[in-house]
Amino acid sequence: MTEAAKASVRDQLAAEAARWTCPHGRHAGQGCVACYHASGEADPALPLWQIAVWFTSPRPMPIKTLKDVRRHGRRFALDQPSTPLVYLLTGQARAATGPEAIAGLVGFLLENRHIADAFTVTEIRAVQT
Image (cartoon, rainbow, N blue to C red; front, side, top):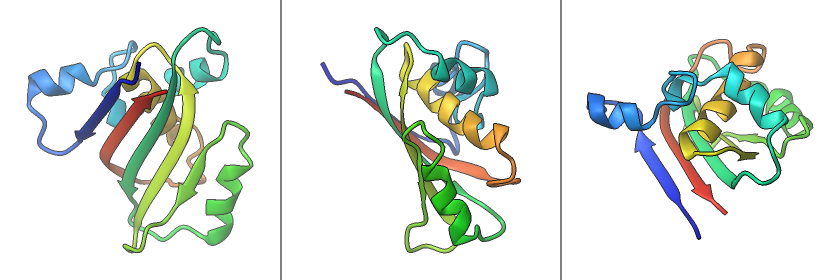
């Protein structure tokens, strides 16, 4: 079974935003450090999610930073599409729900502020594999 979840983070109605809340009460697009840590120790029986998070940053990121994310060890990648100051963070995580998986991936950015000290998530997507 494949389950997909996609949302634009901008202009969400309250009911729609509630659907994107992680178990710790945070909107997936805002990230959750607790979900990030939980994904590192997740039960292998939980679903595996392919996650994509698009975000903007007020400052460009060095190429070295983009490459260093790949060495993180959790199958994360940070790329820059052709649009300046727009970035795509992708990864895999085990989590009970798509919002929890997304919150964990964005939580990676929160935990590692040296990658992007300021950012705005614009779109989130998770597909259960």
